[in-house]
Amino acid sequence: MGFFGRLKAVFQSILGKKHVRIGIYGPPNAGKTTLANRIARDFSGDVVGSVSEIPHETRRAQRKDNVVVQNGASSLTIDIIDTPGIATKVDFHDFMEHGMNEEDSKRRAKEATEGVIEAIRWLDNVDGVILLMDSTRNPFTQVNVTIIGNLEARDLPVLIAANKIDLDGSTPATIKSAFSQHEVIPISALTGYNIDTLYEGMVKVFGKGRRK
Image (cartoon, rainbow, N blue to C red; front, side, top):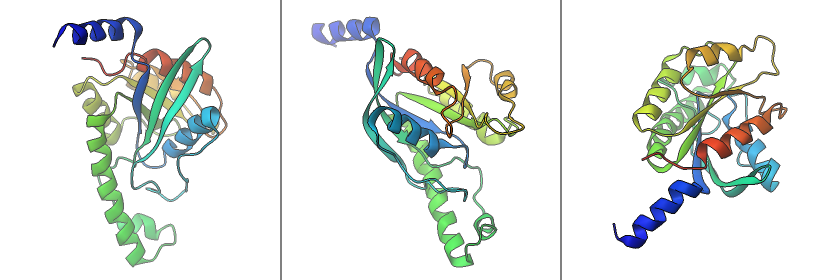
């Protein structure tokens, strides 16, 4: 690295990286697209994708670039990557239970499996991750543990968003206990409850980009 390269690295370490690519990860139906839409709508007026109660509605990564997240006097420009839901197994019968015929269910299951692979590949191209967990469900799942392990192995900055705190049975404290090594922020992506705290965390945690 030449002199100017070293000088740039010094300034980035002091000032922090102000334009980052952030992946939204989590299991199916955790609310990833709802959160991506919330962030995009709050700061750009746009949406990223459609949502559905049927699992794996998002089967290809969706993105919205150059979203400026404001937190008081601080700001962070992000490219949002809304990734397909991570699952250890995709069963076409799950889609049939939502009223889809067998042919469509098998096609959707195939697309969903390909989406999981794509989501994992995106980890090579993001500067940080918002890991979304459904706070009404047990966080001690193979999917959550696997994602956390992958992020820690890559030394990626991560914020855990404990979503759906507007619903009965929500216990974000259980997620905090399960993954106490990371910051956990309780939110409702649907209603926007406590979303400003998430934005504050995003500027703080992701402002320096990927750790080296």
